[in-house]
Amino acid sequence: MTLMRRARGHADLWLRIVGGVISVACLFLPAAEAFALWDDKLTLFAEEKATHDDNVFRISKDLDPSAIGASPRGDTYRTTSLGFNFDVPASRQRFQGGYTWNATRYNQYTDLDSDGHDTRATWLWQLGNDASGQLGYTETSALAPFAFTQSRTLDRLKTQQGFFNAAYLVTPRWQLQAGVRGLEQTNGDPLRQIFDVKVRSTDFILSYVTPASTSVGLSARTEDGRFPNQQGGTLDNAYRQDSVGIVADWTLRGVSHVGARADRVRRRYAQVPQQDFDGNIARAQYDWKPTGKFSLGAVAQRDIYPYLDIGSSFVLVKGVALRPTLSLTEKIDVSGAFEYSVRDFLGNPGLASGVPSGRIDRVRSGTTTISYRPARTLTLLMSAQREGRSSNVVPDRTATPAVLPVDYVVNVISISARIAF
Image (tube, rainbow, N blue to C red):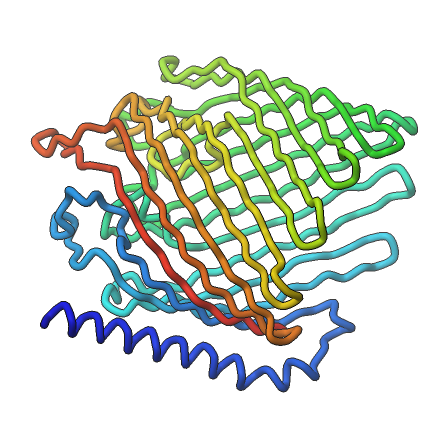
């Protein structure tokens, strides 16, 4: 009887959420259809999303949720988003950007309720016929993924990035590109602030460009990273990374596009040489669009994990991804995202993270999304995701600190309505 009551309760909750989402969309639809801002250069939007997650904290099936002070495993939550996007041409310049504010409210785990935001601004500049580039800034504020923390403790991540790049056509066939990028990431949880990181990188690429816009070139990149909040007695985990490689970009028969790069990487740490790395990384992306209704994207990579919020200073990722999209009608699209990756935690001795040495994770995920556009300004989405992680970590609760299982399986279902005007 208890299970039946819970099932009826979840069903009633979902019916209320679905009804609310559709009602809000229908309320604003007539006004949105007749409203345009700045000749459509500025778009305002609102979105309501309902999600059921059956393993909120991404914990193992072999771990009782009470071990981290969490019961039950799953919960349903709603996310309200408001924001705007702009795309403004000005002579030969273009200004793009946007801001999104979001508020997430849980049905049971109300202590996880939080607000976040996403900001971006880019100036796509053009100087004459031969010089162009981008100047931009992005900022996000959101809770750290529970797949990495597996804890009830909330950790708000703030990630800021600034970038500038330029491309100059030295001759009709040779192009020189240069860029600089800065990343700063801070953790809200005091215990995880030792993972706060600042990264600065520079890039140089010299490419040969054909009349068909196919290009092949040589690249050089430097990166410096440091952890400003390392505690006394902890080794300095700052590093410098240098790489040289080959980049290529070409279109095949008008329906296929390939972008690839391969680099030789050398990373050296200030005080923990056991983390030093010499090796090859590569990434290739293939986009295929044989018809106007079907497209497929495929990615293969052996690369360095882009962010350092996972409790390790260096993670090598090897994996593949497939992203098909099919337009069933003018108003209905079906898309998928299927990924498999192996994450090798190579670096850690300089940080007291609790990540066991030699840890290797395997992550598999699949997502299917159905999109329906009953009107130009309204989009309804339904998605289902299943993700699982296995690991070579052997649990040991007698250790100090205790080593808990890190494997998990999660199913996530969501529906949303987005209206733009």
